[in-house]
Each structure stands twice: as C-alpha cells, then as structure tokens.
Length: 604
Image (tube, rainbow, N blue to C red):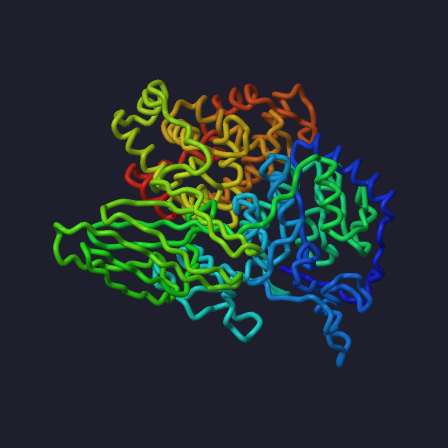
C-alpha cells in the first residue's frame, strides 16, 4: 500500500555539491559500478523534471526549471506556477539525459534492473527494455485486464475515471471482453504484487543501488533501496534534498540528475545517445486480410499507436483508398477486395500517428502475398524524419538467435519426458513462436504456473521467481527455450536426483551454491501453501523434521547456522519420500496437451 509523508517532515532545503566535490563522488560511483555484480537503479520524479514534467515535493524556491512541486503548490492556495516555468505533458515529453544514460548502461550490461516510482511512461519510451523495468506506481499509458491479465499499451493516457479509486476505463479486452483498468496506483492502494516482488528480489541481489531523483518518502517503494543498504550493499542517493535514507547511504550526491549522469557517463567513457522515437509494428497478409499491430519493443504486448490507417491498393493500373479509423482494437484488420487475381497488386499502408511529437505520416509498401513482417521505425523529433531500420520475417529474432536444440538435447528430452523426437521439435517450435526473441520472461513462467496450478496468486508469483532462477542453468539472468525445455522435462518426469538438482536451485535464492535457514523457511512455506497443504500442524511437523535432518547432516550445527550444499540436499531428500514429495514444487505434472501450447499462448 502506498503511504505518503507530510510536508512538515524532513526539510525541503536543496543542496548542490561543488564541481570539485561532485567530481570526486562520481569517481567513486563509477568505480563501484564498474566492479558491481548486480547494479540496480531506483528512480523518482526528479529524473523527469528536465523533460518538463513537474515533480511533487520541490519547494517554492526550487532551482528546478519546472518550478515548485505539484503538492507544494497545492499547499499554497492562490499561488500559481511562474509563466517562465518550462512544463509539458507526459505524452509530449522527450526522455531526459538521465533516461538515455540508463538505456546505454543497460545496453553495456552494467545496469541490471530499474525500479521506478514514475507513471509518465518515459522509461519505456526511452528504449529501456520492459524486461528490465518495474513501474511500482503504474504507467499512465498502460491498462490491464483483471480477468485474463492481458496488458495493453496506448500512445495516450489511459485513465478516464473521475473517482480516485475507480480504475475502470471505457475500453474492453479484445481477448475476453472484460472491462480494462488503468494501472495507476494512488495513495492508499496496494502496489502490484509481481512488480513489488521482482523489485525486492533485485534489491536482495544488488551490491550497488543508485537512487535518482526520489525523496524516498513513499513506502513500500522506498523500502526497496533501503533493503540494499541494510544487507550491506552500496546505496548511493542522487537528490537535491536530504532523504530519510541519507544516513544509510554510502554516498549522497547533491546535483541535478542530468548533471550527475552526464558526469558519471563521462567517467565510464560511455557516450549518451540522442533519443529517437522507436516503433515496432507487425504486418501480416493472410488470405486477403491485412493485419497491422503495434507492439512493445521487447515483449509481445499490444501497443495502440495509430489514430487512422489509410490503405491504398494498387491493382494493375487502378488505385483505391480505404481508411480505417482506429478504436483501440489490436490487431487492426482489413479485408482487401480483388477484382482480377491475374493483376499485379501492391498494398500501401499509411500510418497516421497520435502526433505527440508531430510525427509525419509514414507509408509502408507491402507485396500482396501471404507474408508476415516486423517493421522497426525510428523518428527524430529534431529533423522531423522517419527512418526504417529493418523489415524482418515475424518470428525472427531482432537481437540474438534462440539457443537451438542439438541432436543430443532432443534425445535427452525425448528420453526424460517420454515423448518422441518429433514432438520435442514441435514443443520447441511452439516455444519459439510464443517467445520469438529466444527468451522466456518471468511473466511467461507466471502464466505457465497459472495454467497448471490453482494456488494463491501471491504464492504463484513468488514461486515463479525461484523456478525461473532454477531453470537459468548458466546463471546469465535469462531462461532461454533450450534451458526451459530441458528443465521442464527433468522436473516433470526425470529421475529423483535430476528433479532434486532443480529443486535445490529453486531453494538457493541468492545463487551462492548453498542454502541456509532463511532460504529453506521461505521456500517451504511457498510450496506448502501452493500445494494446499498449509495447515499449521502439518507445516510445523514437516519443518521440524527437515530441521532435525539438516542439523544432523551438518554435523549437529544449530538450524539457524546451517549451510547445505546441493549434494547434501539431494542425499537427504532422496532417502525421504515424504519430504521429497512435499518440498518439491516440480512434482505437479500437467496434462501433456497444455505443457507448451496453452500456457505460452496465454502469455503472448
């Protein structure tokens, strides 16, 4: 639940480091980032003030070009923002130097995750991969279906409700017909479980956390960077004002966010790129039906980009136009009429945008044959021009090729899962179609677990985090399709030892190669609840039995201090059938027909 703090609390005085002090602090920060194993960033409204979006808490005499914060003006009735203040709406704002620096840090594999309190949508618009972002307070361009969990991005603000806690919009889910809801989290409302759990997971793993432009006075969001400092990680706070976590921080940097990031990127010798508006579009012609769909850059989430689409069909020497006014339906479909099938035909699609950046119409020529294309367009607001970087066959990977199954992999999966080679290949092709970039995200894992379990949503989300880690056998933070198929085959029908190898990886939350009391307690409770065995007496009995066995295995050490290796864990559980069955999240075997097709088609 989001909680605020009154303006009468910590001072609003703004502090600015001298150039000499700032330079020394940035030297230290750059060194920490270079040597970090897991670097995360926590962002607040301060990173967007340079784009023209006012923050909330800045004082009446702030140095920010946007002027006083929204709440500061609210608390001074009769006071208006200065005519010289530079402000704009979130839909027209251009991502800042800070936004683009974070994109580049992620591209260089230095930045592993961003947790944001902002709802302006600028992180996604900047090009930061959605898979590396948790928007704790929602996104003004995102709406969701509460029934089937489908997400929709819009190139406009989705909120239409007038009452604070009413989130229903006027639009419906194209998959199930339910009313959609905006994703904004207001004060007094619970934060989204998946984003919150993922953020705390990254905070637990982080050895360096940089806070940018946040007063850190709204919880539970502010508890995330606090977690990094509390477990011994390096917490660095970049903010003009002091924060409640200033004493916990290893370093407090008092500077405008853009100045901080310009200096940091110079120390790291990484240029900050100029922003271009990047649009991803799927275009398909199948049996005379033209289908057009905007998509998120990294996930197959529908993105409503167009105000109108005009379609020019050139058949022989004749041309005719059809216009399609868009009404929040994805994909947009249009039946093309053919007068003479022997004529040469071409289709021209004119894309008319929402126009927040004065984007001109862009026309794409498509041969009139059954085909599927993915088009990436880039718009430079300074020049007013579009460029088309590439057109790919849909299903092709735009970044890296999916890890292919070798002959040995196919034989191994076939043997363990007890299916023939051809069906292994079919499984794999379905996975590639569902996840064309070769990666299986944690949200895919969540959808998979929803399809085969009836446990509580909170427990499914937590379990998905750990199973996703368990299947990541090379510890690169990504589960590819090969890892998933091999892991699922083993955990469904593999030998006890093969299953328990993955069970251990699920329990080993911090991936240090051993499991301790905290990790065991956490996983036992999740699995017991998920498997509907959460009565107090039974849970206590199982945990007591496990504690006794582990203490004995660890040479009589007290349970609070144990550290169990994979080999020891497997040896213990393989000799105790009840413990093995109750403590493994993997011994639920779904019907064969839903293993890949249903669960992953839901996630698209």
